[in-house]
Length: 361
Image 1 (cartoon, rainbow, N blue to C red):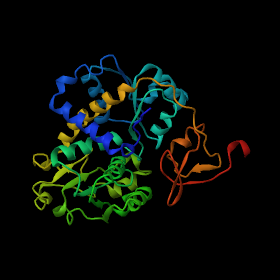
Image 2 (cartoon, helix red, strand yellow):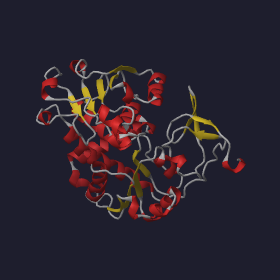
Image 3 (cartoon, rainbow, N blue to C red):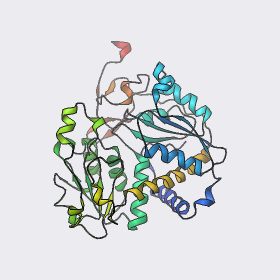
C-alpha cells in the first residue's frame, strides 16, 4: 500500500509521472470529470484548514467522487477518547482514500499502520506537508521549467514550518540548488533538517536579513510566523511582523523571480505585491487543486488491502519530542531509524532516548 507521508519518499520516476498527470489535468480538466466516479474520500481534519481542506474536497468532486469526514474533531468520537488506530480502522472501511491533518507530529505515519486504504498526510503539526510540496513543485516546474540550478530563498518560520521542511527534503533530488534560509535565530530550521541538508551535501546559507539576498534569488518562498505553534503569546509577538515583502523591496529582484507562499498570509507579504506579475501564490494555490486531483486519481487505483501486521517496536526507547504522536497514542510501537547523529523517531524524526517500559515501572 502506497501512503503519502513524506513526498521525498517518492522516486523521481514516480514524481515525474505524477507531474505529467497533473499537467494533463491542468491542460484538459474535462477529460477527468468521471475518473473517480464511485470513489469516496475520507477527509479528517483535526486542525483548522482552508486551502488544503477545500482543495482536496474540490479535487475529489471534480474527479466525480464524493467526500465524507469532519473538520472539527470535537464533533466526533475523538472527543470521547477514541484512539487514532480505531478511527482509521473504521474510516478505512467506509472510504477508498483518507486525507488527514493532525496537530501531532508523526500522526499520518501512525495512521498508515492501521488503514486498509491509502493515507495522505495533509500536515502533521510542525513536521511535514507533502501535498503542499507537490503544489510547490508543480508551480516551480510549470513556471520556471526546472528546479535545477536554482537559488531559492525561504523566509519566515523555518522552525515550525512544515511546508518548509517538506520542500527542502524534496529539493534534494535536484542539481545545484542553493538555499538561503532567512529567519531569526529563534525560528531557524530544526536540527533534523539541518542534519539532512548536511548529509546530502546541500548548499545552504542561514541569514537573518531578507533584503540583502533578494537580488540573487530565482524563487522566494515566504511563510507566515505561525501563532498557533508558539507556547506563549509574548514569544509570538516578539517575532510577529519581523519580515514583510513589499513592492519597494521587489524593485531589487530579478524580473523572472517567482514569489511563492503556501498561504494563509498575515503581514509577511504586503497587498501592493499582489499585482506584481512575479507574485504567483494565488496561481500556486490553483495548481494545488490539480496536483491533488492527480494524487487522488493515482492512489484510488490501489483499492482496499488489509494492513500488514503492526511492526514490533523498541519498548526501551522513547521519543524526546513532546508533540510526537507517540505521546498521546501510547499503544504505538516505538519505531526508530538510524541516522548519523544516532537513533531518531520514525514518526517525527526527532531524537529518542532510553526509557523504562511502563509495564516494568
